[in-house]
Image (cartoon, rainbow, N blue to C red; front, side, top):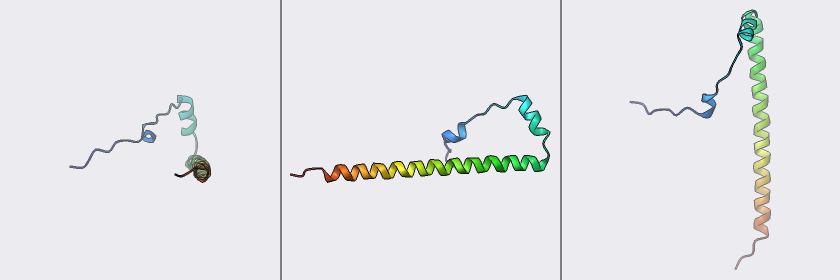
Length: 76
């Protein structure tokens, strides 16, 4: 018996797509659909890279603050 997998918050997302949008997507050729998916994928990758950069900057900044605070500490 395999252990139960708890879905992440990312797996719990839901989206609403109007009937009009679904109809418009259905009218696209397969090549246009693939291009749309590729563009969405590129957008997500760029957004993830930006978030990773921001998180790295925040972590580095927090580390500098911590090091700065430690240098001012007095020891008995």
